[in-house]
Length: 209
Image (cartoon, rainbow, N blue to C red; front, side):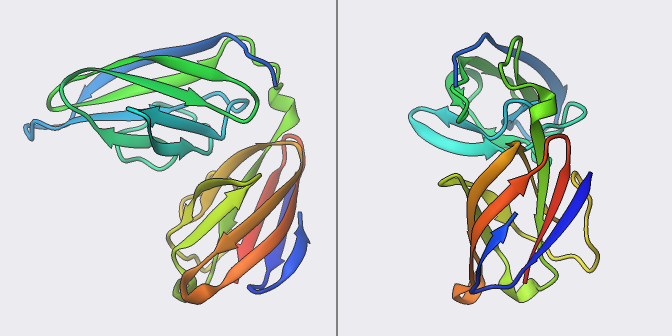
C-alpha cells in the first residue's frame, strides 16, 4: 500500500520491547591504496531499524532503513565511520529493546561491512512499514527529521517528483506500524510537527514544503 502526505512548513498536522538474540556478521572488500580503514554498519532485517550505533561512548549514527544487499562504505542506508586498523568495540540498540555488542576488525585499504540483525525478533516484518521523507524545495535543505523523540537523519537533496520508499533523494525510514510523533527543522527556521500513521508493510511518502 502506497500513501502520500503533503506537509507545509510552520503547520502542525496529523501526518500520518523485549531483549532478543542479536547477531552480527562481518565482511571485507578493498577500497584502494589510501590506507583508510572504514566500517559500514548496516542491516537487511526490516524489524530492527531505527538502530543507533555507539563507539567509545559516542553515537556515530543511526541506521534508519533495511537494505536488500551489502552496501559499500558511504552508501545511503548504512552508517559509515573511519576507524583505526584493528579491533574496535561497538554497541547498538533500537527502541524495541534490541541490543548488540561486539568488536569489528577494521583493515587498512578495506571497507568492512558489519551486518546487524536479529535471529528471533519479536517484531514481525508484517508489523513494520516504510517511510520516505522528501522535499521539492532546495531552499529548505538540510531538513533534520525527528521521530519518537529520536533524531533519525536528514533530507539533504531535493527532488522534482515524488519518490517511492527506497528511492534516492529522500530520507528512508523503517518504523513499527502505528502512529509516531514526528517533527522536522529546515534551513531558515522552517519547522514541521505532527504525527505519522504508518501502515504495516506499507510505504508512506512525506513531502515537506
